[in-house]
Amino acid sequence: MSEAVLDIRGVTKTFGGFKALSDMNLTLYKGEILALIGPNGAGKSTLLNVASGALRPTSGDVVYNGASIAGLAPHRLVHLGIARSFQITSIFPRLTAAENVRVALMARRGLCARFLQPARNLLRDEVQHLLEQVRMAERGDRLAGELAAGDRKRLEFAVALAGNPSVVLLDEPTAGMSAAERALVVDVVRDLNARSAVSLLFTEHDIDMVFALAQRIAVMHQGSKIAEGNPAEVRANPRVQEVYLGEHGHA
Image 1 (cartoon, rainbow, N blue to C red):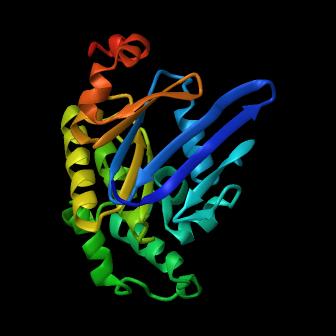
Image 2 (image 1 turned 90 degrees about the vertical axis):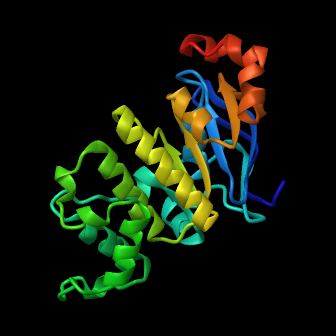
């Protein structure tokens, strides 16, 4: 296995008397696609919130490239190289797709002081390259607010990639999409991982999508990890079938 890039170490998170995460351990390795699955309320989103800086762990640590990042604000983590799609992607519906990507690039490089200056040609090649990476090149002139759900998600990926992250955290990346849109998003994510070696940790309820995309899967139940392994190992795990896969028709 390659080197660890993001390490959740013994993390517990409580809200009042409720324990959302209990001694959770999870490692994301460089260049891998890791899925996090489990029933509703298992703690998946809480874990992503802790990993992305939105929540501080009650105990335990989050380590990125060997350094503790527990408690650092989300914008600090973005600059370190950890992107979370819904947090760092401020998609402006009245701007075009290309303008959204350009704003993200300008913000990342401290160019927003020039925001009021004509910016149509600023970073044109890089904007186009990012749109091409997510197969949105032909939609650059479309208003973001008029895009279909799958197109908006791919635009969010392009905005996230503007920060040149090494880790991308995705919470339900294909929620609300048609089967065709989900298939395209899976292809785009797989291509991004193969081309840039970005490490991806995602949660997803669409089990078919999980088994099509993930190289490794961790299963959560009631705030704890109950199984981890490659897709075949997880699918065959009796405990996973009992608490999760059975209800999805994959037991």
